[in-house]
Length: 597
Figure 1 (cartoon, rainbow, N blue to C red):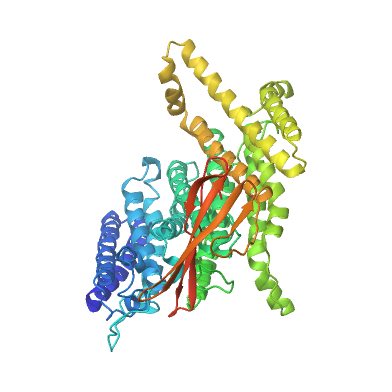
Figure 2: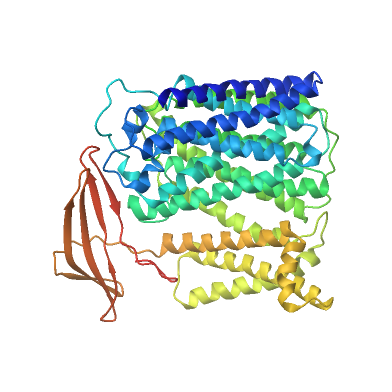
């Protein structure tokens, strides 16, 4: 089986290489037959990778320890559901997962390509398949998931204990897919530059894929926060782990891009700026993959024993250099864009939005690489923690929320101060009342009051826009129950975007609440004892120890009381894995709409 898997991996190398060369040279030399043939090679590459993936998954399910990778990341004692996901728990398997999923997305991208981008599609295909080629070459030469053991062990080493969590089904696949998929809008941009086009032919395809990738990456980041909350004992939704930050880094310029591309569609400006944004997003996505492949910055997420990080760093450098050269060679060919008519305009607000996103990305990047810089220049590793990010990025995020409330209320091109003030009166009144209520309720910290007020400012502006739209439709005879859905679908980029803004508001409120009003206590308890935490009383009822083949599980039973009445029972604990000398914790969590215990 190992030989068959490796043969199909080698076939994917051949097909991917042919697709890159055939697409690029076929378009450049004007040979449509070669372009078509190269496009078919994309499909053959995907089929070969699917077969390789199926073989590796089957090896995990069947506990075939003749595979070096299977023996290193599974065991007979491992829970059956984990065998299905263990194949991307290590370096080699995750590379195969990324290559297969990305190739599948490439197939969708080229078959569903917008009509306007068809002219540049061969160059786009060449760029996309060059990324696939890099991954399959790395596997074929440096990280073969089908390497065979000469002596087959009776059992494997087992999966990393930190990965024995239901989140393993969702968080790693979403985050890996989100990072690699940034290459798709990037490829449409580079293909556009290589084709010699000068208008907005790439915009629709890049915008659609930008939204898809942004959604995947957002879900991946949120799932990572949830996972950290339940297993790593970080005490919250986030701890600024370097590799989680590596997922956040491309998300920031990508978010700027999906806002800025709207301006290009509407006004025909920001052409080079949008290309620069998507190049930045892809560069930071590759940097995230570099860190995840054993870069110099330690993290619970990185494959610490891998030396592939520097291979990815070299690929990043080549991509960045080639992109910058193409970008500057083509910059002189673009017609002079129209300029701003007023700073009181939606396009000016979007540009300010972009600047804030990039500033936050710069702060996060500096925090991520600072330990490495301090070690190189001072010989001491200085860790950058949560206080740095809170102080440096917090005010920038608050500024973004303020701008998120103002920008949608501004018109395109130009607005008068009177028009702007009229649109902002209601949100300002709501924000002022919320701030006043915070003071009445005894809140004295300035930042939470600002955060709550700004969040209500944005929500009030969105509500005002929705109500205005529904009233307008009602005046034209639209049924009241149909008016709101019709409003959303009548202008999805605008009214649908407000839904995403509501999500950001909820996140901002959650971050503020957990950052400023969480209560933490360390309390030693013996069986039968009770202790009080705020309005909860916690009773340590019993504990249980269970010895299993690969681990020793310790679990406590805690009864939770409120107002002298039992309201819940929690079972926190941990499992110690002797083979890994590592413990995986499980927090006992009681979640309600108001708070978590």
